[in-house]
Length: 306
Length: 263
Image 1: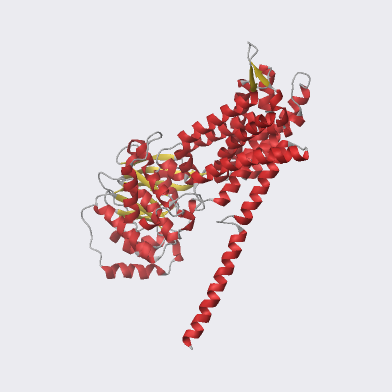
Image 2: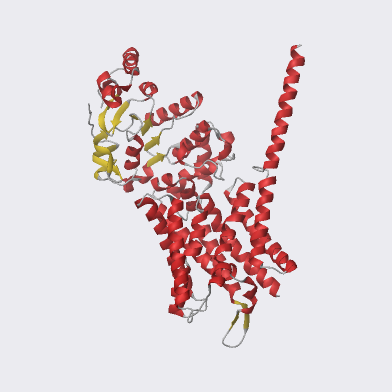
């Protein structure tokens, strides 16, 4: 049963991350996801100090706010100070993350958080943190409910916002010209990214959550040229990664989140080599084919002329 | 040289636009007529694209205002279409030609509305008008530059607007696409619609447009073409750079464009 819980929680989180990550990479903002996943730390600590618990609604709100502040600061430094985007990202998230580290170390006694847990997470503990009702009924792991709630929120957001996200991502000037607020959709997406990050970081940590955002989405980007099938493929890959990653980890008795991220890396490599669209293997075949076609053509011409 | 008209499609009133406090357009003040094919001409960095972006509210104005059909842009948004430069978007984006054209319907559908059969058949009609119906399902990364520009034009047609702003629609397209686009723009103006085009090539400008705006950070001329293509005004716009200038004014003379009194 524990296996199923872990795989389920991992899949639900990776699917949420992958769906949002698809839009991040199309917006060339993959590293903004990275930045947010680190910068929410002070938000988590402050919310924890206020609410006193680690899986509270306040925590998600606190982190989502920090995520929005992060993406706002990145834009601000980029636009107002003419700093390159990557430099703006580098400055913003390290600074906020450092602030979070200081807060954790200063309030170490009061905060049930440590750097290790923040950075790496531990999905193996998911089945231990149970939701037991006042009547003493065991409802299963809390993380299961959180991850299901987040996925539902992401799906609702995407089904309402799909068209507008599509248009603001592809052609923001045109979107603005028909009266769609670019900023609103940017910050809505960033808010969803922050919320998802913060819900998932407990299980997979701040570093590997980036892999969930970027790698399955990047893999399906190599495999298809349709946004809808890219999203569907990302969902499938996210599930496969979690499933295979978990069994890899239990076979070698290693870190589960590490194994999930590694599995997704293997899938990316396979797509890179064998994708029917962009794979280097298919390109090589096409090149050879063209070459042979050309040579046979010249042969044909020669014979014909003679 | 400036000709003012009554009941304009677009009116710029003392418009100044700056990037980082450095003005790139100074005190643009002009009225542009309805039902005309209007070319905005000027050298690189003259602020041509900036001018139409400012008109579309995509850039903040440092001073002045722009009126669309004698009102605010927001009142008339559904009547206005904007075609950005082809290079401004990522053509590797995973989407198909017909999906791009359907974007032209978004303003009419709204956030929660559904794309109806009518919208789809209209989008197909627009693709047909630009000669791209066979490419409807094609992924946009597989289209040539000219085909991409046609798709952008089809999206603009799908908006069924009365006023079109187009940023360099003729840039880097093949000859057949150029004449196809020109035909469509002429048809639009014949239906009484206004088409405002940023254009960089003087020679073809002489053939394409019936109203010319000469721009080089400030307004140099805005008038029917026969009043504008003079040695002096072109010299003023381009500086001494153009040896072509005299050739072009010869060309204009040869074509013997009739003067228009109806403006």
